[in-house]
Structures are given as structure tokens and as C-alpha cells.
Image (cartoon, rainbow, N blue to C red; front, side, top):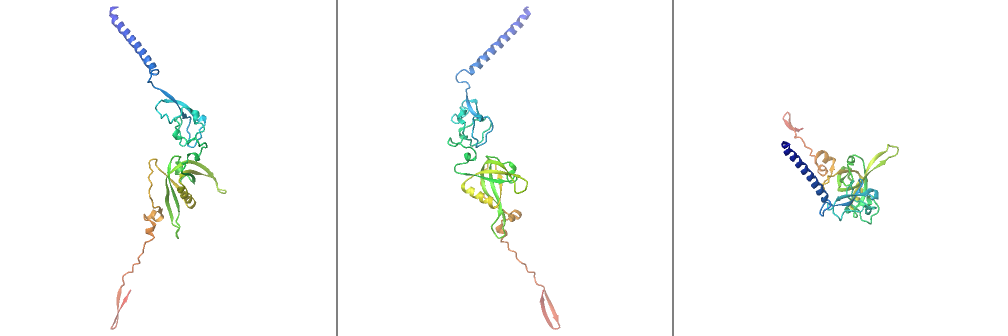
Length: 273
């Protein structure tokens, strides 16, 4: 028995230490949620699903979930989801994302749609384009685009020209419209709604009525405006603007004359060829 005494004492010590450690862990875990200064949460209103901009919020579109207190600005969040009923979004919100006050239209705005999200100093204007000129359907709300127009210049030759007429324009809505002409097969066209100043609206209206519109999609980080001269057929093929090509002068070169002496008896004459 003596030879097992040390082993028994070792096993007993291990059991007592393990039991003590378990009690200490459970005590510390319970204290961390009850003592002052522990982790605190608050209920925050979030969307139940993806909500595009212009949506009029209804009660089934929002819920509250706990967030760490202090992790979000208290002046921007809603702790009561019912306060969001009837408010209009001016930017999209993903599922389970907090709905901040900065993403909402003023309280006075009760109707949704494009009218609620367009800048008060600008206008919303829609253009119809095909899939190719609309970058194959890759243009979405929130993107920025350049507008190009291809038309014939008002000169005697009706010179074709393509020019960027609007740059860094915000897309606020996209959609599809079914179009059918006479007995032709129905086709779908993209309808892109752009946010424009009054001056830009006039330029776009003239461009759509006089030529063919095409959109160029911009990178989110690129807001630079480029001054382009436009491109004509001469510039496209020969790398020079039409102004220079129209002033070309063709000089007709006269070959050197060949002189032949003609001798008739005592008479000598020269003939030029």
C-alpha cells in the first residue's frame, strides 16, 4: 500500500486542481456579464432583405438585432423599428445592415421612386439604349457613365463625327422595356435614368434627337473630366483631324521638257516635247 500512496496523492491533487479551475472559470464567465463595465449591447433596426434606393420602408422590411453598444453612432441608428415605417431610402441597403438616418430622405418625402432620390438641384432623365451601347447590361444604379453621341456634322459633306458630350453622370435607375415596331419581332431595350443638371438635360435631349447615344462605364474612383476633340472618319483612319485634311493641297508637277534639234538643210530648229 505504501508504494501506491504517492500515486494516490498525485491523482487526488490533479482532481482537486481541475475542479477548482472549473469553478473559477464558471464564476469569471458569469461575472463578465453582470459586473459594471462588461460587454453591453443595444437593439438596432436593420433591413430584413436587400432594399434598393427609392424604396418606401414598410414594417415587414425591418427588424431589430443586438449590436455592440458604441460600435455605431447613436445619432444615426434607430432602436425602434416602427419609426422607419413610411420613410424613403436614398441609397441601397443590404440585408441585416443597419438603416442609418443619412440614408433616408427627409420626413417630408412620403412617395418613393426616382423623384425621392434625385438631387433637388438636378433632374432625372431616361434614355433608351440597346445591350451593346449599354455595356451589355453591366450598368447599375450608383454607377457613373460618360455619354457619347454619333451624328453627321451640319456641313456640305455631312461628315460623321463621334463626341463625348457628358461626363461622370450618375445612374439612378435602370430597367428594361419591350419595344415592337409594326409587325417586327418584339425586342427589349435598356432604359437608363441619369441624374443631370438642367444644362446637361438639354444637351442630352439634343444628342438623342440628332444622333445615336452610347454609354461608357466609369471606374468608381475616376471622376476626371477629359477634354476630347471628337473623332471623324479621317481622324479614325489617318490619325489627323478633319480641319487639317480639308486643307490638303495637291501640286501638279510638270515634267521637264525634252528638246530635240531638227535640221532641214541649212535650217536648224528646236522642238520641245
